Image 1 (cartoon, helix red, strand yellow):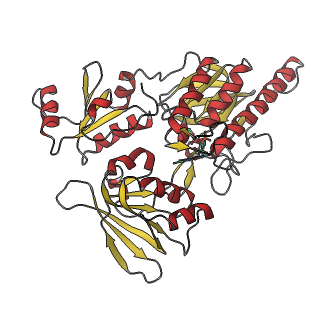
Image 2 (cartoon, rainbow, N blue to C red):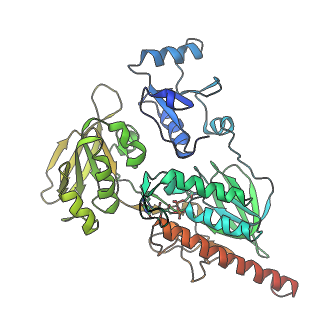
Image 3 (tube, rainbow, N blue to C red):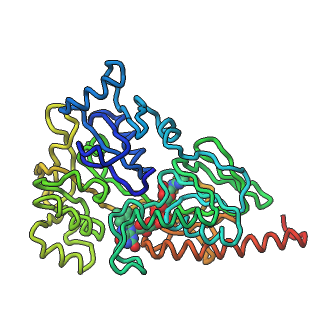
Length: 421
Ligand SMILES: Cc1cc2nc3c(=O)[nH]c(=O)nc-3n(C[C@H](O)[C@H](O)[C@H](O)COP(=O)(O)OP(=O)(O)OC[C@H]3O[C@@H](n4cnc5c(N)ncnc54)[C@H](O)[C@@H]3O)c2cc1C
């Protein structure tokens, strides 16, 4: 498996070990592509609409039938219309752990979870990390990190994530990916149960919630249908598709929107930033860069009302309907692609009402990173009050590891002295 890889441009298939044949209008193709991207597996995408060689390949492999997606692997084998489970098995992803009882289960294998795992394993704590996507979290899908200490020239997000993974493996942590945790239950007697979507139950005396946050959507009409077909949330992942394009739209004038908008200028003639407020919200430094950049334009007090596909049934983005928020007037733009950066939501849905959350649904913790459930800790971007930066995620990962060590030491001592449950 290649960590840190992204979908390559159509037709440049020889660069990747895996070839995915499909069409933009095919929801199963989008699902398979998303699964591979989530696992950070490199693949080349072939849109068989208008690609005769790709279409022939699909028909030859499937006895004359046009079954998509058809996924061809480096060993020459292929899967037609594979489920995510079949893809995970083919990629050799471990989906269940070696044992069912651990000292510590870490939910989320981003920078926070992996740092805690490194610290915990060095303390000889048997530690299992479970991630629903690919290990490395948001850092793994970030093009370049320029503010992470120790790398004066900056470092690629995927490379840094791979280093975290290697270090955790070196200390003997067990790491699962493509497995979602669906609940955490206090079983009493200081035992916690972690259930996964694969139906496994893992028991531990301490659990860390390090599930980070997800991109927020605009919720404009047509957005869902056009995700991956013109509407994107990651410039690093999808920006290169727009090499040589005329115009890209960035929705959101905060730090992410401005940073990613500047990044996108290398692929296109014009980047238009659409911001609902009457001014940009990013840092002064970024605002200055945007203002002075010949390719950047800003449209204030506008919001996206709808995303509409091109005529002709290609399923690709054709028109973006914008609303002037002062006058209510609608106007149309026809960008080649749209990148949405309107904030993050914490990944806490799986916790139900078992663990106290703050008013923005981030996990509430005390000063020791402990949640409302004894033995369950939270750190990194998912924690209320965290700073949503890589260095602080890593810092919280280290700090919570020390708190967990202290907690386990205390409950062991109490058990030995016959105190408590
Ligand atoms: C585009 C972008 C650019 C950025 N650039 C910078 C930068 O330049 N500098 C900087 O300092 N920071 C940057 N950041 C922020 C930085 O990446 C985050 O602060 C950091 O990754 C947070 O780490 P985390 O481990 O807390 O969460 P995440 O990185 O979000 O990791 C959480 C992990 O939990 C997993 N997960 C979620 N739910 C479940 C579940 N139910 N079961 C199992 N696993 C689950 C997810 O798959 C994910 O892998 C950037 C972020 C983004 C999105």
